[in-house]
Image (cartoon, rainbow, N blue to C red; front, top):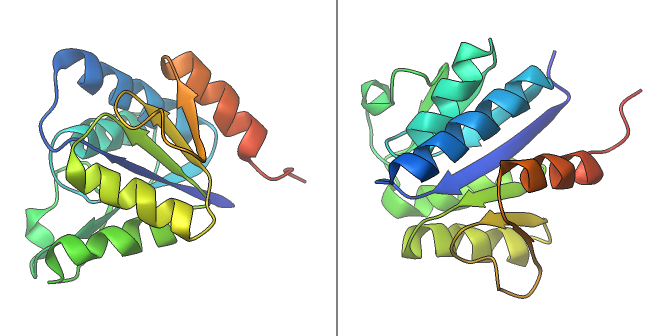
Length: 154
């Protein structure tokens, strides 16, 4: 049973380094009983879901289009919205907090919405210098920050 869900946002196209980071973070979260909420498509979303899936975790993809079949193969719970980029709000709304891994303006919109909602944001790569954002230099920093932000498990 999952007590926590964390949103992961990031680049739809990414380098091998960013893909490795996303995979490692997704794997870590699943191993710690945390469900991933993401946009369900490619890039960071794909690799975070793959890492979680390989660790036996659950992944929820909140998709921009009307078809659940658009989700990457590692999304265990696809949700079609037909909202386009407006689905970004639902991605960050449903996580306890957000981890941003690289990304462009779509990721920036998710970081801004999470901050506006009063949710913590951990940023690895771009957007780590924004007010209210916890910067991370690598996955190990992310793990420490995740642990510090999770509510006590009883």
